[in-house]
Length: 367
Image (cartoon, rainbow, N blue to C red; front, side, top):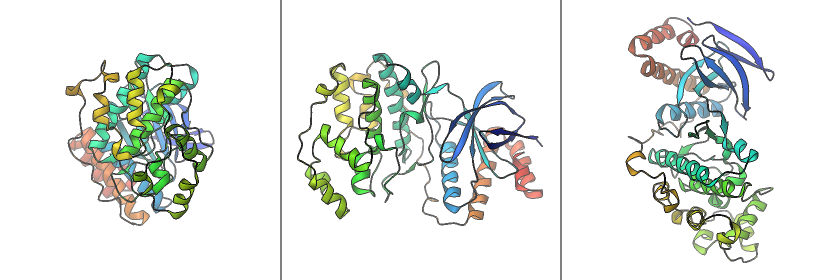
């Protein structure tokens, strides 16, 4: 059984196996703390994400289970990959992934990006989205800080904690405001993979300009800023609005015409502006899809239809509508972790882990 070591990071107890050393904090989110570490088994740097108190409520248990299932299922060069997972004696969950040196948010705040970097980063974002969407998954929270980049300019999308199935009834406030698609603000319920294309378009614009395209102070101001550039929503979009209050607000806005994006992005070439025009469209059904965007002339230097894979099978969302108690989510989580170790370490290791779970405390199965 591996030994657990405790360390205090930003006042938070990190309780990890001795396999991981040299902990350094790299980020703090609403649901957990992320540290860099060295994997003694592989001698490679890794990121260790602590999910704090994952079994404190059914909602948090379900969210953690969803992220674990997604990380196990999504295997693609432009998606962050899970290398290890364990539950500590204090019953916190730790995800271990590859470590990339920076993220797009930090990069954008440090220097302007040259054209070839913008093209390559956008290409990789869309390549990842093509795969994710083919798996029946909507990321929902795509933003520069969720796009990791290493020194070779390899890019990986991370943080699938908010990801959801395609086209259900969805809740409204999910993605960070600047990158939030208008249909989320307008309907708060039905939306699909196109919300990620909108977010990618906002990120593309930010790479071109060096600053956020729609920096709204609140959701009302956010929508108003969008209409200043893209004009008043067309009637077919307005007709989809469910909320009377939202409909009243949209109709109260002054009528505006869509502004040519070439006037806004004067230093960008025509192909860049054309692709951006196709990504930032009010009607989500008229927005360009990831697969078509990859084939756009702007991305021609990198486009390779033989190397832009789709998922082999759709993600199984059957658990997503389940209203289960914490103890049930916990059992399901242990089962997923055992399955992960079976796959990663081979049946012999998996059987040993399973026997540990049956014969002793469940935590011992992953120690």
